[in-house]
Image (cartoon, rainbow, N blue to C red; front, side, top):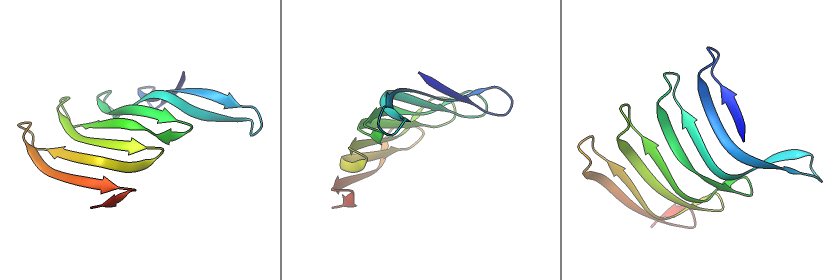
Length: 101
């Protein structure tokens, strides 16, 4: 697990990775979480071969879901939802190969 921090020491990112031997580089693989400077969860999702893959969820201040987006190998696919503060859908879009359909 790799972790990065804001200047004040508050957790900023945490994610799983593996070391790519040929490139001598970290490749994100598995779950990831990003936090605000105040420590609140901003987004969470998964990586596959260093690209967003599967469902990513974004959060408003206070922990309410703001957005849900599906990715396949770093490209938006399927339905994308944005929510009002009360939890009702404010916008729904459908993506095919990263483009709004």
